[in-house]
Length: 367
Image (cartoon, rainbow, N blue to C red):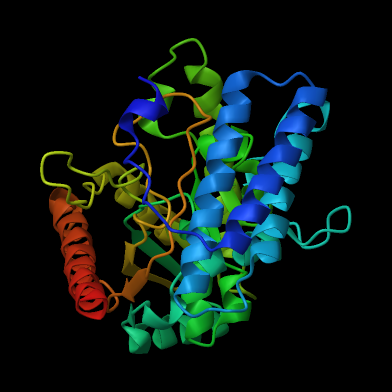
């Protein structure tokens, strides 16, 4: 099924004449460049869609009163993203990720962490984006300072979730700590042409989710081996007695998907085995470990396709919207060996509670 048939329809945005002119000029230059390299029509179409969406989001931000978000900034950001994608996301210069990846802060003259945050921040209505559980965030950061480890069990809604985490932690005064967070990443973010430059700017633990491993039995042994290597690298991070590590993971194994019958976006179920594995890693590390649930509202920032697709190359949608983040209290150590499900259920319940509170807060702001 193609992305065109499963992605929510774009939001109609009435752009100013200036934004329209710069957008059209940007698209014209892009088409000329793509024509020069004889790019496939589907690639050109997806890039034009990306440009249109991004200008729409930043145009809406400008119209909302953010006058520092200009048409020139939109052009600079989107052209930079596409150029990075063409250079590092395909062909002989495609960037190759190991099972563990450190953010590239000065790679061929570019800070890819800053690039990713600067790209998505203008599309977030930051002043109207709620952050709940500030006292719990403060507690988690204090644990890190003591050399303890912190694992965040989060729901996952958009490709921009790492940038959302960074921007929301910046809002709480933790910009430096935000840059140090490790994200457990699936294969799409390290193989998709446009996703690769954004992934280059994050600390990643690269794994293959169970559903994608089982989709191709021929490559399953290699992918399973890579997952074991990734777990070994992660355990080394957690064993460091000198420095604490914060790890973000989506136990569902993928993004939350819109219910096309109700138009609501429910949280995907947490996977028991994933959470068990992180608790086992915590025990093996021999270092103090702390587990929290993180609730995220970011779906409308970059709405994903309504159905899971095996390949990469989906259309990118970008909207100017509030986002939201909540950190729960530290999760209680519920359930023994025979009732491990109690801890997973507890983690999901806390995530759901925070998610519902965020949706209510954003609804009040928007009304």
